[in-house]
Amino acid sequence: MAHVEAPSLRDSVANVPAARFFWDRTASACFTVLDHGTSLGGRLVELAGRSVLLTSGSQLTTALALIELDGCARRIVILPPDVDTADLGAIIAAAEIDAIVTDDETPQCSALDLPLRVSCASAIAPANLSPPTGRRTEWLLMTSGTTGVPKLVVHDVATLTAAMKARGAADGAAVWGTFYDIRRYGGLQMYLRAVLGGASLVLSSAGEPVADHLERLARHGVTHLSGTPSHWRRALMDPAIQNVAPRYVRLSGEIADQPILDRLRATFPQAAIGHAYASTEAGVAFDVNDGLAGFPVAYVGPNRDGVEMKVFSDGSLHIRSPRAASRYAGTGQALADADGFVDTGDIVERRGERYYFVGRKGGIINIGGLKVHPEEIEAVINQHPQVGMSRVRSKQNPITGAIAVADIVLKSEQGTAAAQQAMIKDDILKLCRETLPRHKVPAAISFMPTLGIGAAGKLARREQ
Amino acid sequence: MSVKTMSVKLTILEQMEQIAREHGKILAPLKEDLVLADCGLDSLGFAVLVARLEDTLGVDPFTAAEDAYFPVTLGEFVKVYEHGAR
Image 1: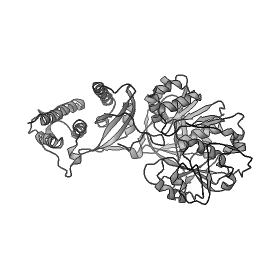
Image 2 (image 1 turned 180 degrees about the vertical axis):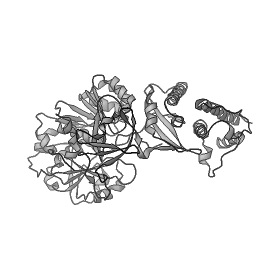
Image 3 (image 1 turned 180 degrees about the horizontal axis):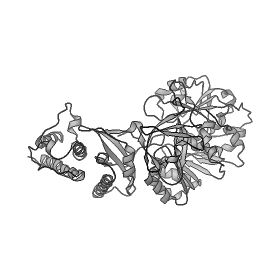
Image 4 (image 1 turned 90 degrees about the vertical axis):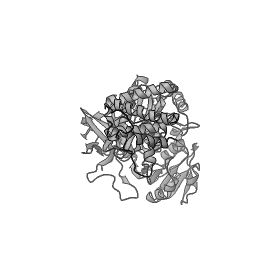
């Protein structure tokens, strides 16, 4: 598979002409001083050529350590915050980990017995190091699947950043912000965009109220802001959204339906709004910047950035791309088929001159033999002006085996009086009946104060 | 018949009429001995009915039950809920 040359992160940082920062909830770090400083206590040289498990309670500390490790370590295995500690043994074996970089805020990792332990910190100490660089470090990212040991997907800076190169010049004056956690593929994309583009980055912090995060984004003058549609729906329900004024708004990681694109357009009339399609395995496939849901049919087939897409007869989207991961680590399981295509598991449907994402292969609800994707029902419910977020899920049913029911979060201030709720419920059901075939109309609607979003930024579909 | 069981029955009848309206079906007169298969709702209509009743009465006596019993007449159907909605 063809690879594009990419400089190491350290080289990129050394070339940034002005001071750039990472900010999280409690700390800030000027990462452009890392070319003559260290957040690893100057011990980088010991990590040269090793397979390093990087685990920290802080995204900021992770962000700094990545710059030092790239080009020096053989492998960086980034541990996301939500990985089951019972899986650590399998992960260490699969990735042949022989060193840990940790801030000791993750006790389960501190107990691990590995040949080398190096502390990482959110502060940078001056140091004159000439660490061994020039290595093509493998970056191992974990899939966000909900069952079993996470798969370790092997990338490097070239595959991770190929989509950025294809898009052109860096924007040094930018301040990136993201609702994602940078320890997974979606957030890591934003991290690399900021660092390689010579921009600063406002990081998210777990457990931080949305309003506080939005205030921080506003305070740092965020210009480029990204998250999943679920992140955005939650942010748009918060009055503090009025204080941020990004000039670029980006969505990825879930289906961007027309209502969320329209709401973002109305909230940020001056901003460029784009939704991207990517997966940890297949990489970034494309961006859509016309403000419409779905993507033009012309994107299928070979396209100008070397990304080739096929739609199989079951509607699943398959991608062959220089931005795809090379393999899974520690398993014989193939990442791509014999022709090099990765099955994304996402189902698309052609309507006119566009393809629309309708859901996941594994997420189908079978209602007495009729198949439904929860996402297509959510897209209709989300059209209702009083709906902030929705989740459609399968409910066991004695007659049809399963039936679709909806959990809905109303926008702020509504959802108080029971009589008003009943009216809204009828209204939503009416909208569904007008738009959807009978079996796709939710059998019941519950109003919820909030809906969970998982560590990968996606709507939590498993919880009750 | 107590007020509570009366209200269970009324809830069921109201929901059946509501679902029939929504699904564009015409219900047979809702008498005790009406055979459910002939009442005018199809299987999807019943599936929705059971889901709605769980929402309003807080119980789905069929999914909770060990056996696969499903009542034949409307009267039996109501009884299952009157026992379930304690």
